[in-house]
Length: 317
Ligand code: SAH
Image (cartoon, rainbow, N blue to C red; front, side, top):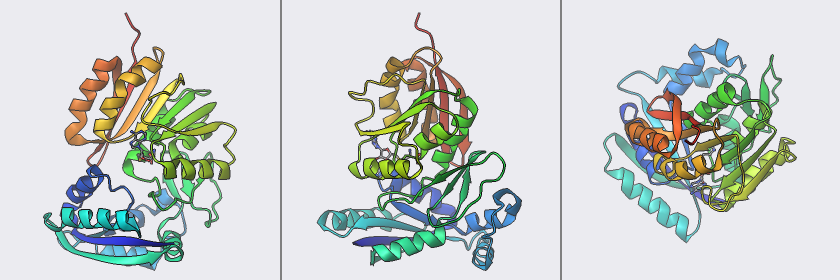
């Protein structure tokens, strides 16, 4: 199948602004190649412990000099009328943004797509114990690591965004074993799978996007977790009759605010509410909504410009 790519070259000091605007406009099917990531891998070989620190990464990391660093964002679109329109809108959106140096458009096909993922998607540690690996990589778990195998479908990234890893860290820290978990905006299913591997009894993943529901179900099957995880199509928690001990929701700030009242209604006192995908500039506003809905905030995690709020359901009085 053919698809379209919009390739955006951005100077390193403006990448967060450009990424944020794209995400806020709903462009989530993106891949970001940042020489700083390569530098980070090269500098923390002990942490990554994998043997893929190759020449390419070392040479990419040399390009990470301040001032000259260039980040490449690739957005993916379907090769049809709607995809073409979305691509044109995205192009218009970024063309005048500061830091954007060049925008090019190409048509690719699935075989190239797979090839690209094979190049860029390597086993990656998320949180303390979870390692996400693509199906085509061999990986042997060290110590108490838990491995999730995941081949992202075209509509998704690898699920390894900072906002996702903060949710995994929060699950590791706050989830009691045997929990019942609701994952709102499940995407590839990664958080529902991480929760079950980390000791949850069962999970339900909800997504508004049909493609996400399909890809998540496939990933869950592939990992042998279908007995414990259900996936359903839905808009936030509308019509969902599920009483979770934990809700994890990696959405945008506005959606987190919309979700919070139903999250409070559906959980007993002591229930844990993990929300992520919140930009630093929105964290106060979201925190207030979360408190007003009936939660106490336990912790706010930060990674770059992103925040995750972890809260506990108060007793009604
Ligand atoms: N949980 C995954 C994916 C997060 S991306 C991870 O952490 O990596 C956010 C997901 O929320 C997308 O898959 C998107 O389709 C879904 N989403 C957006 N609006 C939604 C809504 N109103 N109800 C349910 N899911 C929604």
